[in-house]
Image 1 (cartoon, rainbow, N blue to C red):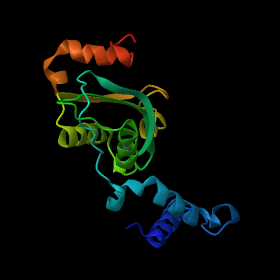
Image 2 (image 1 turned 30 degrees about the horizontal axis):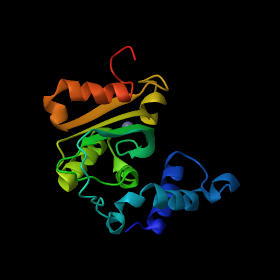
Image 3 (image 1 turned 60 degrees about the vertical axis):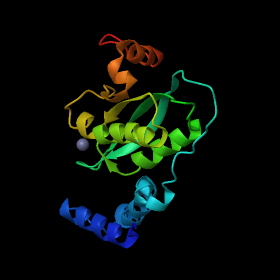
Image 4 (image 1 turned 90 degrees about the horizontal axis):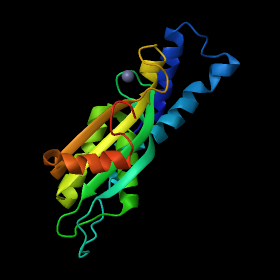
Amino acid sequence: MIDPEKIEQGVRLILEGIGEDALRPGLKETPRRIAELYQDLFRGLDATLSRPLSLIEGEEFDEMIALAGVPFHSMCEHHFLPFFGKAHIAYIPKEGRMTGLSDLGRMLDLYARRPQIQERLTSQLADRIVETLTPQGVMVVLEAEHLCLSMRGIKKPGVPVVTSAVRGIFRKNAKTRQEFLSLIRLDGPDR
Ligand code: ZN
């Protein structure tokens, strides 16, 4: 469980560590504000919120289902700065097993609200869909700007880091992959 008291203590130490006066008016409430903020930003660590994906069965459908361009925000666990961008999630059901689109959005939100790295977030989403639906295939693409890269000048602001996780038929079949990539308009180096 998140301990706001501990976060406040930690933020006070950081302020002292950078040589600031943690008691000056502008900073006095900062530890409390960050403790409140972190309870929200790291909500995904609360295992009780992690309901399974709902299962919709009995539909005759075996075409691609894609959610394109869902905005998300997460926190880089290496530097504790945000990374944020868009998630593209597609799967092809097997024997009519599907899930609600809002369930996919909720799953993204829960996994993103943790200390994360983009690669792990990407594969967690794909693996969760595989575990729950055992579909013919899954593909997840995340494109995100990392403040720890752009603020330090390693990458230009706005230039996204792109990661993908590819499972099942998307891995075997280049045409299926291409169908998804053209849906999300991410189909080449000169997009
Ligand atoms: Zn980072």
